Length: 498
Ligand SMILES: [Ca+2]
Image (cartoon, rainbow, N blue to C red; front, side, top):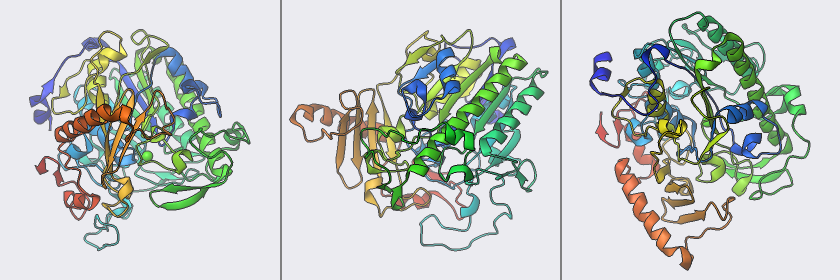
């Protein structure tokens, strides 16, 4: 592993830190946090003073994207630095290829102490007994007694400290694991525990001469949304009784919405719980930031706050994610590094999860693998250079979040997102084209307009180029079942058999 990594490293970037002063990295990402559920991005339903603090003290990105808005594809892109078609991580509940290298491996090899606290969702977990195509279940191998447990070793992709679970929705007194397959139960609400654990990690590091690379990943504000069962009362009290939804949504709750798993009623209690979870994440982010201040670690710690994807919350008649609309793909991203990142800076650079590894390596001044799909945006973060791209590939590969299905054709799509436009092609050939500047709520599909004909043609051509670069053949979701073995471990990618 070490030799392989050493053999394919590049060093560089405008933000290279001197060897003696390696910055700590604290990367906090929650799950399904729509941009509008933060006051610093203009949301008015709730106040998020701690996320706002990061915007005030660091850089706010207005075009941070979750190009495949689903848990595992985002996490795969973040951790491996590769497109889903190159890592094979394009559906939930799968195991990375056996020799996969993660961002924590890279930082650990550079001398960092790595840690992961929270929701992992990069192992097959409870779906170990199933084949990849829903409805064709068959047993194949003994599963772990505790399938959400990830034992120390390669499954943790380089994280040393571990307090994590794969996927569950027990937000109060739920469970997690450390280094043995025995459940530990957090005493209260999930985000409170994660902040407690992160604070203990930081306190231990106060006296350490090793820099740390810590990820903290709350499962909030992902469903379930059941009031006090899932979120503290005081957080619910901070949400107005009459929440205001985006203009591309009905305004009077409850109303029927669509998601990948069918139609359901979106209720006021659900929506208020959702926002309350964002309030609680923000509160606990504040506790962690306070700890950085008290320990003196803040000055040399790069803090990143983001999320794995957004939430439709009634917009476009939908709940959940997996769709190419702004509520799902355009996410909050804030980066603070005192003395390096200009306070209050705003960037419109297209920033995707595969960019975090090259960018953070560059900021920290450490070598990175040369087979990454992302670009080094350290110059953008430090406002010293503007190496940006014009557009990015957006994609959803399957019509179920957890299986390689293709029977719900409308949910398999590819597209191009530029700073100004979104172009989408569904598997059935239908297309969308939105002008996100003139029409930020994406209420008018311009694909058939005479005035947009040339733009549509250029976006179609650009999509073909981006698909070719990602080794993406725009295949039906069932095709990808061949990419996994019976344990749902990646054995093939768009580049071929491993
Ligand atoms: Ca998620």
